[in-house]
Length: 168
Ligand SMILES: [Zn+2]
Image (cartoon, rainbow, N blue to C red; front, side, top):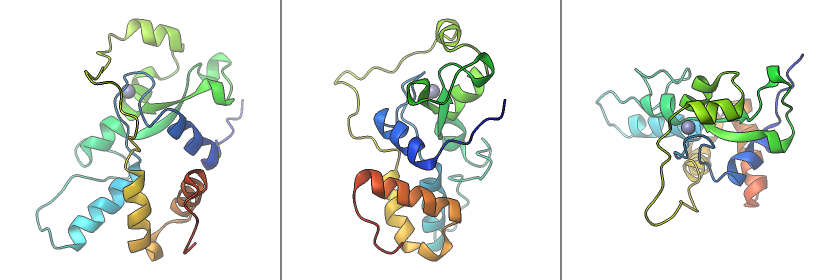
């Protein structure tokens, strides 16, 4: 079966629907491009020590936060088991859960993994955005350096948030 790539608009909708929390472990997830430009910003501003904020492969040695928490779209029921890409079957996941789940059935995964579901004493975060705000702000600072794909994400995020699309 050919796996259709998910549109960026759809992915943005899923992330915000799930409030950027991992469906499986409930940890807050992170929009990886924000870390890329945070890394660049810190270094451009003269911070001389090595930092491990971003790596394009999300390698643990080079970007531990992304290795754990980078936001990805996951299928509740994996494609190979007949799951589809309709919105109900798609969830936000952290990179770690996504890698651990592989193609297991979602219910098996939830049952087998003894997740310590994070539960806040004062409730769940309502305004966590995966550092999307940072990405929007840095995308203006680094407008000329954005990749084609990052521009797509920026436009999709701006459309979703209805904050206009000045400069694009
Ligand atoms: Zn997770």
